[in-house]
Length: 414
Image 1 (spheres, rainbow, N blue to C red):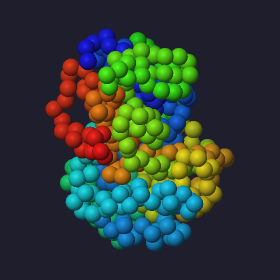
Image 2: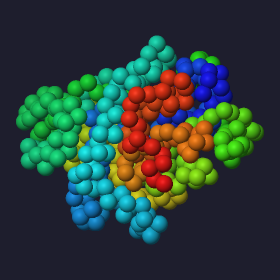
Image 3: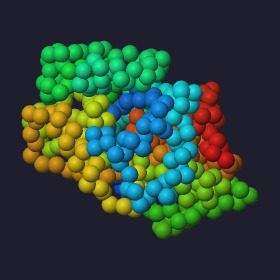
């Protein structure tokens, strides 16, 4: 696509805004549309970590056998709204089919390409802009009860080491010397250097929208209703605010991308992996760095408005309200990990991670339509958003890319 062409980016989350900025810098006329304000959807509530070491999918070997048992384990952060199971089952069978060593290693290589240089990609996106202040370089800590608990994750750590991520180990009393917020239940830290976090994901994406406007792009609040195709290629998007002519488009609406993808001839096995967070307002202690609490599989991150504890996996679709059990589990794990911590207030949130059956996003053109996909990031949306946006901008411009993106090919599900 030549410079000056009109591109509509559908979706104002981290992926959409990153893509729009890189497209604008490549000389495109860019309009972002979203039914809500920028950064107020799924991007708002993530754990905030720039998790470059997040190169291992959930579907590690053995999950297909252990999964059903874990659903009944009150000490494991996996939940299911049982009434949703008949609808979930076809997706779940394909998802669990990847829980083997060969697929896990293949998926890990794909994740590494998207997230491995996350901090550098975020810094490149925001350098010299008003959004720069939200990006904080920091350690990323994995907190365990003891050496045995760490050793139980040896397969996962083996894959991280193969990707170049080797932790610094801290044990015993040195744990509390490193960070006094941890209680006695935490006896070992695996510390990853050269990571980072965002001090307010929602405000960060709103700041990215300001960056796009300052650089000549447009952000419009509008609901997508349809797309116009001519000879199989997009010529306009139709919204409740009117028709917007375009030469190309980007679909970056997370788990809500399925209907438009289907209209474009792409049936995507995509489900909502419901995630929760609780923000502890004015805590008596604040972590020095983001921490993945291994026992509860949740991330605790120091942020502008308090300490955000985010995690839990629940399958229950897009329409059901928040469940009590995941939030109760999260509170129990917080008190176990930080027994001496107090706080003044709490804020709860439920969001929808877009999960494909192979744990990899869709990045590329959909069926030659001129519409490029940028969705399906599951747990790595914030971490990999700027890299995804840069890749899509390269694909839509004359720059191209020399990276092998076949793992993210939208046509792989055909």
